[in-house]
Each structure stands twice: as structure tokens, then as C-alpha cells.
Image (cartoon, rainbow, N blue to C red; front, side, top):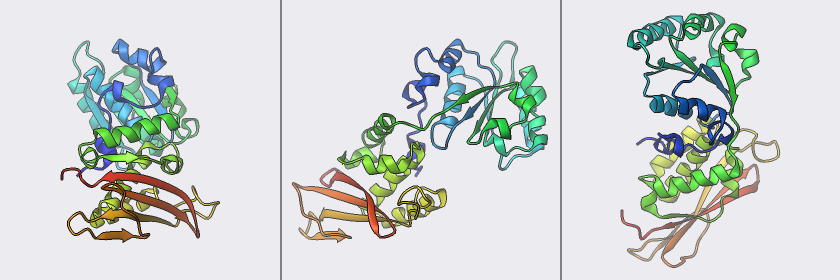
Length: 297
């Protein structure tokens, strides 16, 4: 099954959350998209704010071929091959194919040089995504041929909207009838990163529903991706462990109560999961969720 963040990736500009200064009504990038013609540009912003999603939505909106390269795995040969394919797919007055390059700041000087001719002639429309300042990481000739748009970390209202969309519209989560009671901790820990927010929610739901294998896999993936760990929480000591204390879980068949961490109490046929994020010794944040165990499988 796809991760929650991928399942919730917007396919339309109307479903895109955040970056109102760029894609809101009357904003510069929105006007360009509505006109049906876009110039090459670079999206600069922190991880998880919608750079890749925005590029995909633009290509779909303009109904133009979409090519993608990763600066981590692609070389000069790959760049030239994609440019040749884009050139062969272009018709007379159609919009230029879009070439999306993720982590463009990782491209070497020679790789960036290989893009100059195609971008200048309009053979491709370049959309680059970077988390680093392009002024230092992108060569000047390429930077002069592109617009630069800065994406911001998602605000609290955007993150809340995303959370509610996840529990009400996702094909898996809406079956569980999840009620969000306390969101301050998960919002704070996400740091304005939509992908991190959804990964944490996915981890919590997997642990709360007793899906141990899935929870372990998500936990390992979160650790590898930096969702859990680092110096974001806990007074500089770093997050050392994510502990899921699942309480209030009642077995409807035998009336037995199971607990992981702390013992809970049964509340009206519902099960509450309390997740404490602990850094070092002290509990720094907590998230309360309530899941209806009476929902159909």
C-alpha cells in the first residue's frame, strides 16, 4: 500500500494546500498557469511543502508531456536523452514539455550546463526544485534563464486542513472513524512539513490499531527519513524515541482490556490512543486520538 502522504497527493490545483502567495487567486504563478503558458522556474523551499506536487499539477493542467529527473541518480547523458525525447514529442504550437528536476542543487556544473541550450530555446520548460539557496547552488547562466519562486513552510491552518482531509477522505483512514482531539503536538513536531505530518499520523494509526508489523516498518522508515530523531524536540537533546502508549482499548468479544504502555478505561464503546513523544526522560508532547472500534472492517 502507498504511504499516506502519497495517497493524499493533490491532483488538482483546487486541492493544493498552502502557498497562497503563489497559487492563490490573482497570484503570479496562478495567473501564469491560467494563461496556459509558463516560463522556466525554480521552486525553493523546505521539504514537504509541495514542490513536486505543484510541478505535477501544472503539467496536468497544461496537458503537456512531463519528464522528471533526479539529480541524485541522473548524469549528463540522462539529461541529453530526456531533452531529445522532449524535442521529438513537441508539436508546432503546443506548450513545451516540462522537465522537472528534483534536488537540482545536487547537479554538477556540467550537468547544469547541458540544460542551457534547451531552456533558452524553449525546447523544454524547466521546473527545478531545491531546498538550498539557488544563488549559491545553481550556476548563474541557468539562474538567469529561470524565475525563482520561494515556497514557505505550511502554516497551522494548512496543516489542520490536511489532517482533517486525511481522516475524512483517505480510503483507509475514513474507515476507522478517527476523531482528532488534540493536535498541538503533532503540528509542532511536523515543523510545517506536510509529508512529515502525514507520516507521523500514519505511524500513530498503525500503532493504535495493533498493526505491529506495519508500525515497525513505518517507524523504521520515519527514523531513516528523519521524522523521528534529530534535534527538533527536547531542548537540544534530540528525539530519542517515539513511544506509543495505547490505552482505552477494549476487546468487544471477551470484554477484556488490552493496554500498551498505560492502562486505560473504556469510554462509550470508543478507544482512545494517547501518543507521547518523549525526548530523553521527560514527555515533551502528547497527541490524543479517538478511534471508533465499532466501525465496520
